[in-house]
Amino acid sequence: MLNSKVKGLTVKSLLVEEKLDIVHEFYASVTVDRAARSYVVLASTEGGVDIEEVAEKSPEKIIRYRVDPLYGFSEFNARKIVKKLGLDGEDLRKSASIVYNLFRVAMDYDAELAETNPFVKTSDGRFVAVDVRIIVDDNALFRHPELKDRETTRPEDTPLEAEARKIGLAYVDLEGEVGVLGNGAGLVMATLDLVKHYGSSPANFLDIGGGARADLIKNSIKIILSKPQVKVVLVNILGGITRCDEVAKGIVEALNETGLRKPLAVRMIGTREEEGRKILEDAGIHVYSSMEEAAQGALKLLEKR
Figure 1 (tube, rainbow, N blue to C red):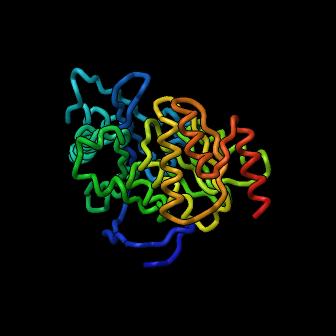
Figure 2 (cartoon, rainbow, N blue to C red; figure 1 turned 60 degrees about the horizontal axis):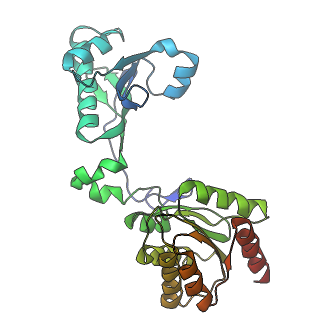
Figure 3 (cartoon, rainbow, N blue to C red; figure 1 turned 120 degrees about the vertical axis):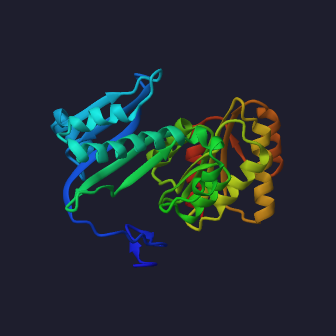
């Protein structure tokens, strides 16, 4: 199976696990209830299936326990939950241990979600969490240096997505020919929509975030230019804490360092806009006043190639 393709992704490693003789499957998770501002523990006898489907069709099959942040979550609380799953005796003790430890993992690693689906009872009486996943809050990663390597390596990432993640960029590969860079997810999404609206397809989603300096812009442009499918680059910047002159410097530096001369269409308004415009115009890059004009300009450049 190594190096084979599964849904377009290359298999780089294999996990070999014990084969289990399963008697029953259960579900448990710890997630954040943002409305209640607390963790909530969910459990069900319907394990190994899509829990959202269970919640929609048979909500009575899901046990929901809100964790009071003042009192926390104890093994006693875990036993109360699994007892409602119809478990007792040694089964109750063993399964409660899984639920309690799941909560500890969520707390210890600042998880937005810690889930085992399923955890199972085997024919020899064991309880095993056979499939577990955890989503750690990105904003808490500074507290977990042991996760630093994992932060930048996701099996599903393409090479460019992995490269972008390492330098803190929100980047997603797409299949079109118009490279897109913007600041703010909403602005980037609107730019992708405009590219589609005017008859082409975006090659990527790239959000540089707020306050990006010239060096990050340079590396962002380099990533886009390195994709062979990209025929033209559309940059859409609304300068607030992001300075337009820093964006312009980064664009020019990227072009000078790579030597690649794919056409660019830039819309840039806001903080230090005039300085940014001058830098780009001195480099022979036209700056548009509106995102609609920039998108149309990008497609005209594309038609000329």
